Length: 457
Image (cartoon, rainbow, N blue to C red):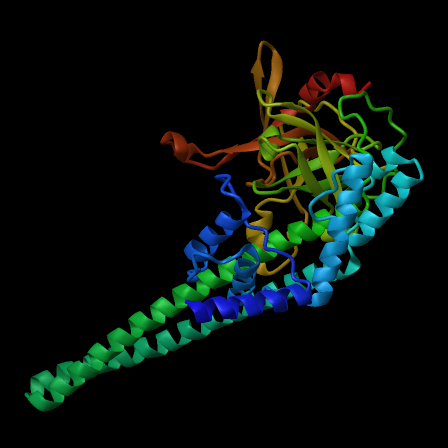
């Protein structure tokens, strides 16, 4: 114990000289930094801790057990400068900077505050260093490559298993011949070979399952990292969101592109909601109003909007302006602008040709095909039924192809390029014990105008 204490003390001196900061250990039970660190070392890191170890010795033990995570002297100095800047902002101006604010962002905020522009410092977005963006982009590429390697490994194992099965079938035929010939020794030897093939087949199956799961996990991480990258890009261009409840004066939309396809790609966005999933939305105001379904957002109050991948446009931050769970409609506001928009029109005509646009199964398609999640899907069909209540159309039934992720996307009259409905759900007859094709339903834009009237003036 004495020897361990001496080693720890020596490590503590070295750590102090190198400028290593103490670890950030949660203390949910209010034990204090020393006791929380002791619990973390013993329980989480399985480190033998002397009962009389000082806090500095405990910190040295922590970094010694996590050599890969120990910061360099330069990193420690940078972290110390960041902590000092955060402290100055909080103590001098009452500004609580975001947890991920970098040194450059904090320096800029402090300069603004000292110039007397405290409001601007409070509203200034966190500027993420380009190096961090590059690192995240490289991670996306690396995860994609690793996932493809795992899929290739799975395919290779499948090929080997097929070859093994062919050999297995031949061995079974040979076994029947030996049984008829009465060659007991050869028969027993071949049985052992066949049993070995069966064991090998099980091993290959297990390896294939592992590779498939690993590929799925890596693709999931890649998609999450892409969302993070999109959010950083959106934050980099974000401005003051203003009052989300105030009526919005339309500053005028961008000119409408030529052709329906170009119009849809310019005004329909993939709505990515962190820790929830994705849906579709479309701009109805040049000032940034976006319509989608309430169930796309759930209890979240912000999202990221991505255009079709070919558009190469910067993602935007979306914030909830108004949400109506009963009608399953949500109005978002995109920061910035002006934006391209889709007009709205009421169309109630059976057999009328229609077009739906959206991003169905965005994450799953991107995972399976190795493509971008924001590749727009356009489907053609027609109105097949008008579902009424009290002589008013409550639902537009159509046969355009939609799926999970299409929610909130526009049902468009191709003749005018105007939105007639908001795609909402697909009803499956099998869910009610019936049979037949699924039925796609959209909410008529009349409801959008009625519910969000205060923001459409």
